[in-house]
Amino acid sequence: MHENSELDVFETGDMDLEDRQALRRVAGLSTELQDVSEVEYRQLRLERVVLVGVWTSGTAEDADNSLLELKLLAETAGSQVLDGLIQRRQKPDPATYIGSGKALELRDVVESSGADTVICDGELTPGQLRQLEDIVKVKVIDRTALILDIFAQHAKSREGKAQVELAQLSYLLPRLRGWGGNLSRQVGGRAAGGVGIGGRGPGETKIELDRRRIRERMSKLRRQISGMSTSRETMRHRRQRREVPAVAIAGYTNAGKSSLLNRVTGAGVLVEDALFATLDPTVRRARTPEGRLFTIADTVGFVRHLPHQLVEAFRSTLEEVADADLILHVVDGSHPDPEGQLAAVREVFADIEGASEIPEIVVINKADAADQEVLDRIARRERDSIVVSARTGKGIPALMDLIEERLPRLDHEVHLLVPYERGDLISRAHREGEVLSVDHVEDGTVLHARVLASLSQELLRVGKPVERVS
Image (cartoon, rainbow, N blue to C red; front, side, top):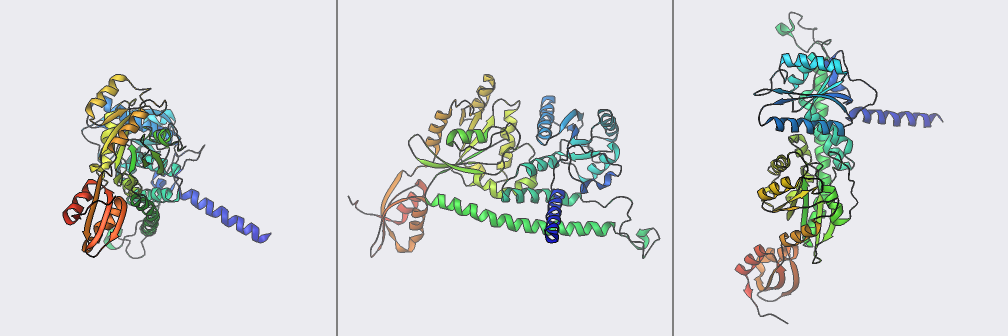
């Protein structure tokens, strides 16, 4: 009995530790602090929030759309949005993000509304976070921390959880602070104001200890993610060896990527009207109208100013896009700014090596809810585009025909004598094409295969034509 009770305590302690390290909301608790310098050691609790943004460029409509998206992000994280404020400035204030005068006005709004959190529409420096918290006297977080919190809630797989934790630690590391002003810093001599030896406090020591532990944890997570990505690469290479073309669904969060995957393959992936509802990539098989087999992968959604920590942490997942033969770029036709969605996704593509060179079809989704004028406008701007509705099935047959047309074809049949010293081309034919027969003769290898145009040209350069055998 005693042993069991000890085991229960141990397990409960592990659970408490895991909860403390996780970014999650705790219902019914306020994040209002007297000593706001300790906030980075508290859990991220999002309840009643006030949003604040800085409008530096673009139109007023662009600024409103950005804050509206922040509202959707906050609600996805479980918050109740009480108010939203926008400050017009040439650039964010380096000290308090919105300026000291506006920060005092923000404090009045927070007090009158009863908010316990302020969310800023941008990535704040550690100094901006601290000074704004000192003024408004409640928890202040930025857009990056909010997105990381949502990712932490929605990650389900072991790899996804590791990627999110790595991104969280990358964000936290430069924002560590001491345990508060009540502890002295680790200084000595003149810097100690005459206190000298013996006047050193534990504050700085604690920070260095935390930093070292975070760096060690980050190194461990990187090794784990590298090991987990090996299995993904193995499966990817296996598909490539079988010459199964790959299609990747990419696009803005909540554009309908999972709905499109379900419509094309019947995959049964979670569909929810929320930002970042699905994070873990799903790969399913599908067939074109002519019966040709291909794989289609649903990838993590993108958003404006996607935190660079997430792009780095999810790099192994985003490789599904880089290794695809065709990208279905899904955009929400009913969104107030679909062109902005397209630009934000392509900005992330630029960070993924090779992704910008892959053929792309812009799939304008949610046609059943979109304005026809908007659909026509996007279709005119995007050369390779098609209008569909994943919910009703409108346009899906035409999309499947377009996929059939755009996928690379093994339409080059070769029958050549390839010298033995070019065995690498024979290996490529096995890996990338469909080998019909191989015969080893005195002068080399007689290869009869169907291959892609690029490999066909190389084979024709080094091989000698042989008479076709019936």
